[in-house]
Length: 202
Image 1 (spheres, rainbow, N blue to C red):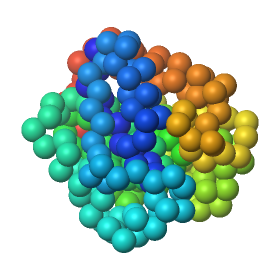
Image 2 (image 1 turned 90 degrees about the vertical axis):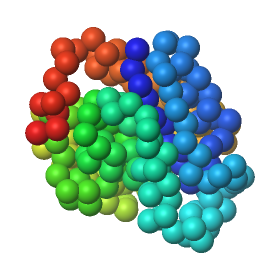
Image 3 (image 1 turned 90 degrees about the horizontal axis):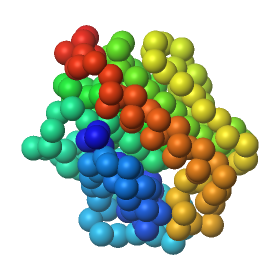
């Protein structure tokens, strides 16, 4: 069983994000879903981005960091789009992190310092998602997985951004099934790996 924090995308903690967390729980993992929007959800990505700009990405990032206060140090951090920011920061800077799964987005590791050399990472996105390919995320992802010994970039056919949220019109069932399977395999491998937490902080 892995301890997992799942951070939602710009439309909020939607039923689809909750459903993904429930899939992980059904496989025995302990999953937390911090709500960076304090109960708000949005019908469109544009509305969510407007709210994100209103609150400020810095404040939302800090909400994400604060949300794990008091929780176990040894965690896997999963972020969807906007949620990649707190997931990636915590993975890079919070001692004890076990791994990171970055979905739809990725920022350069230099945003948060350096990537711990032994910390595994998986990045998932659609190959023609313009928000991923044209905003620098794809380049950041390729650089990251090239740098990290246990790093993988998984690209799926299609051009949808939030393809893994079953409550949105952008949902792609086939890609999500493969993404979920890969994520469960990743969590299982971390759960059964020898305890090298101290080394991951190096």
